Image (cartoon, rainbow, N blue to C red; front, side, top):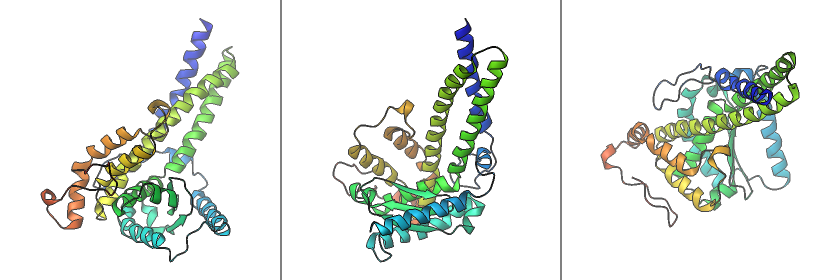
Length: 298
């Protein structure tokens, strides 16, 4: 009986976190609708220094890469390509975050086999040669990846995760203290509550990824890049990565789920793409990727 009460107490404590993290603030003006940004981002950036910290870290990463001859020069064809795509995307990214107009945007390419790319707070973008070469990304697919990463920065997911982590620690410690006051084993409650909180944080991360996919589609479509490239991108990723972690414990949605989510938003983003291309929506040809085994997307 005591163990059941202890477990129930710990689980209920962990469940406070999603309720606290659901506070909202900012609604997009048009295009896809993803709701307001979480108040947790303010808790995670109380000092207001997150952008500066990201800029310092980014600069150090680029400096280390340059010393290792892993930083592509400005005249590298892929760097020119990436920066040209970013130049088209950024104007359509600005309405998603008022502060983005003040960011000192940067785009660089790192020589690494990693299939990865990111955009740090403040608009610091990096692509790895591994994602370009292994997936043989078309311009449309690069725009989908870049739009997704930019969306993480615009929606301040880094600050949001920091805020949620801080809230998690406060609540778990508070639950342990309250348990001790009630005569329970505080350490045991902290352990069980912490495990529940970790699962909650994984869910937050999956939500962030889904939101970044949706916002990224909107940005790419407005800039004239085919949103259907997102389907081909994840089909390519599935070919490369046959063994994905189980959905429940994954910090990212499974490929099939992402594809379904992307397709679900075609009615919202395909008209934006057609408008950017100055053509009638009904006349758009299917999206064809450049890898055998990846079917065309209608």
